[in-house]
Length: 279
Length: 244
Image (cartoon, rainbow over all chains, first blue to last red; front, side, top):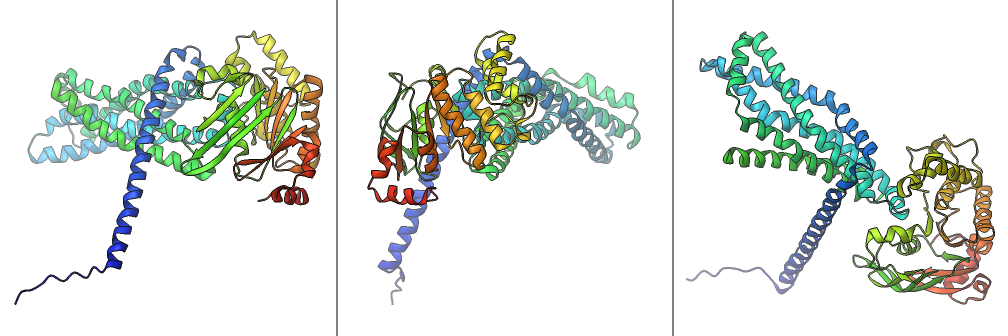
């Protein structure tokens, strides 16, 4: 006897299912539309921020203010994260190398990790949280209270006045912060190597300096301007896009931090990949 | 003179303004009356070119600003002053810094001249002694007066007021309304007042446009509002404040 596949789909349920598909399809199309519209807006916003660079001299006071906020004021958080990750790395990698009798390689392995990856990455994530959240909240509050509209209404370009100084300041300050992060990370690793693993500092540093190649620094320091652009533009754009009162400011700030942190992680991978493959 | 010709505006699928035509002549006070969320403030933003309409034209002093570039609009906007609903004062700047902000930003004036202009506006707003205070330490009425002083800083010929008396006590409201009237009489300024308070319209406006469901349902001299037969206008004349 032939078995026949039973189809329980009645005309009513088929109509219901196709209705659900239509509804989700419509939503998906709308979301895609919104996504591409936001991307277009972000591109134009970024373009205007870069095109405002010639006004840097006019807004030098704002650039200095922002350099203090994202640079000098960020030193403690960058130091804390770099020192703790350097120390942790030295302990864990040292333990691992001990199993292979290669503890003297600790300097080399921590130096590469810190300078190429962890120093800039941690600095980027910390600044995404600190500088990015400040940008998002401050610009979001200005947007909600119509201060940004007021700038436009009285003939001032809000992107040149508010975003460009942040971008210039971040581009300038992220480089020394990366260097500071690398330095603090390596110092704390050296300290742990000496006091935890009982490795002579001479051996540690001898494994660091002679073996570092220019490409190791290029990988690390190229990330600083990339992160500066990502963090500043994403957080500022989200601040400018804030809608819906104080809750809207909160939402835009969170979105700015989450998106910029995600992009920092992705950019970190691609910068390393591209530089290491081509140098 | 500001003209809106058959202006329409949509946010997504929602039609905010439908075929709006308005004319605001120099040295007159025009009120735009309507319930909250009907698009009154949007009309002011259209007049300044802060928002672009989907269709129609916005004309300021004979210049079509509908599709004008942002940088070109800056010059046009300085012909008009804007007093925002929440004042939009810069909260980290003092009162005198707020008043001088756009002079320092946009005009290459000597610092002495800027200080003199700021002092004039401080005096006009009756805020002597408050120059170094932050906006948060002032009352609502005082903040509104600072916002009006700031709107006058470029000596515009038209001022746009977004709900000038909203959230103010009756005494402060009266002061603000008399300030608006005095601007026309003493400074030959025109004004557009967006409001949902009908008493404000009768107190200061020469003419009034009533906005209802995105359309202008009345546009004439204020006195004729009493003769209007539209049910919505009849209802607001009896209720005085629109809470619809």
